[in-house]
Image (cartoon, rainbow, N blue to C red; front, side):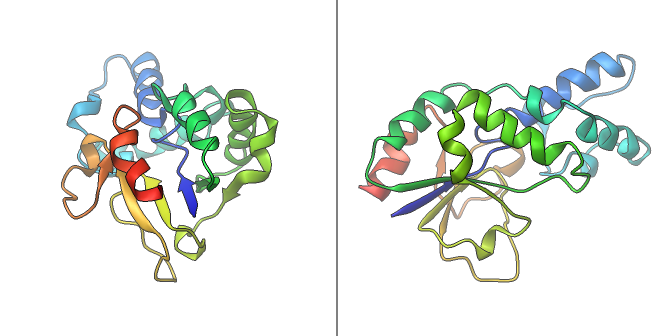
Amino acid sequence: MRVLIDMDGVLADFEGRFLEIWRETYPKRPFIPLEERTTFYLSHQYPRQYTADIIDILSAPNFFSSLPPIDNAIHALSQLEQLDIDLFICTSPFHYYEHCVVEKYQWIDRYLGSHWIPRMILTGDKTVVDADFLVDDKGDITGVATPSWEQIIYDFPANRTVQSKKRMTWGNWEEVLLPLIA
């Protein structure tokens, strides 16, 4: 049994950190509260004239390494690690990857420990990674292959229109994920 866990939005609070920096950097500009997010990509919901500023935040040094863990994610992952499964972090780099890639490794080392580094899969196309399950907050994952995995949606307001997949959070993962991998 192989389980893939996405990083941004599942383990690391990408959206919360972005919103914090946005509000500090541009206090007079409109912002979208997390509960009102309706698209996966920030630039698709914010006004077009802010796209470059969004990219500046996401590609800045220390953005990815400064993401706080999502509540209960680290504890749940340590519990999952005790099970008889192959467990990997499967994450996609940001298109402006200069800082992103190394900072994702730093984040894993800082919050999960260096023994997780070999279990990190960095790919722009998750459909080519062989597994039984993928826990991911992106509602529609596409790529060059038909995925071998079943996706479990990590619940977030921007993906709530997806009704056809199981949903979980780190508050209910034992009820959702454990029966599937038992």
